[in-house]
Image (cartoon, rainbow, N blue to C red; front, side, top):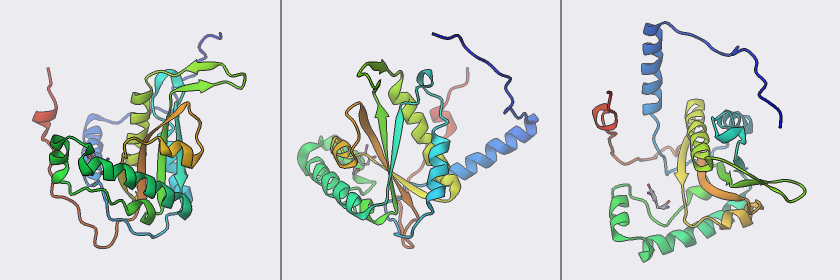
Length: 222
Ligand code: IYR
């Protein structure tokens, strides 16, 4: 075991309070424009954009800096077709009676169903895997910490980075998602976390009319 090695915090930038407020408001307006999109165009997206956004996600704070994530960016049409077939099979079971009525009622106003054409239409599927533990070459296992939290934070940064770059996203969670390990050739120490669909919205994309809770409902200042 080695002790900690430190160097000065060189990346820090300080803003005056008024500038902080302006930046906070500007970012809030920018992120509030983000909408989950289900109608995607097949227009291609440059791979370097996706690479940079995944690099941004990889900066996320995480348990013991083990960085317990893996991102599989899929463009291959045959692979996407296989993912769609498997996902729609799961979703048919979910919407066709597998899910409790209360859950189906909660989804009714979003208009979701078992049809997932976007899995083939959108140019990129980014499948996010959570690494439950690391496996060393000699077979020993190294424990990862706060895996769900870490991968959730990285995914949030990925969604934000893609939005900031000018792309629309959809978080898609077929359940169960075990088929993704098989189709994408990922090892058993990785568990699929979610599929992030990324691309341009279709020209006639429509989104549900929804609102976000006001500050007073989501925050308490003591
Ligand atoms: N996984 C399903 C169902 C679904 C669940 C929730 I919670 C949503 O916010 C949206 C959909 C699907 O992708 O259709």
